[in-house]
Image (cartoon, rainbow, N blue to C red; front, side, top):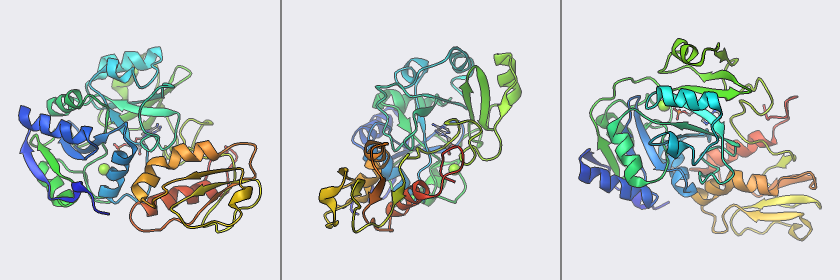
Length: 336
Ligand code: AMP
Ligand code: MG
């Protein structure tokens, strides 16, 4: 798919002029790689679904993980999420720094549902790096940023690493030298006053326990795979209704998630119809995926029928997510 971010990347030393240039890129929906204290991030405007989709496209990620929204402070975070008192205390104690907090998204949270993988929660963090903070302030929006490497490669700790991986896929890399930590952030979620460790990382559990005056509970196994309490650790929104893929004929009472202009039989009897991308654009479909899954879902339908979606490019991740949504449910009601 032709897109202007597919020109060769430029590496710019992170001067004030370069920050302004990078902020312009972010605001118009392009990707910018930038340093944080952990690793280089591949950043996009968190509020623009198609910009978020471009991250997955550039990384070649075969699935949509929820991303971390980077903010310039607690006040900015509070425009996106609701802080409980303990989370606020931890943010005030450890930010800026390698602590990510998973918090309930505010009803008016402008972050794209692709960035949260359709969850009601959002992961937020204030990075301890001048360049990252200047970029967020100049762009004026939260920036989602997974590590700036091709999926499966090691995380980049220098601008040259990013260039080696992504030069043909993004327009701009801000060079802030080598990153200090090289370890990802610690991810924590407070539930009912109890701090749960979703991922160990750059901030030690002991430091969190000392600040909280509480024991940090380690969640079992891979946080994205095994919810220990309903709704707590699922890494994706799971629809209530049964999902059928590659459908050419809708059954009466089913809702239809269409794609492109290909005709689907029985559409007149569908309970609801939404089109992920009428023009058949996979980036647009990715941006709409979780939001539309929620909008077609409901107790009043017999299932969700999904029209055929190609398996190339972002289609692979879209199909992966829909396949999980279609999988048999475990007792928690989440896809296995
Ligand atoms: P990173 O690879 O550093 O970009 O971190 C992204 C990881 O943060 C994801 O793979 C999830 O494990 C975690 N994460 C992000 N958002 C959430 C959320 N809303 N709930 C739980 N975990 C999350
Ligand atoms: Mg990585």
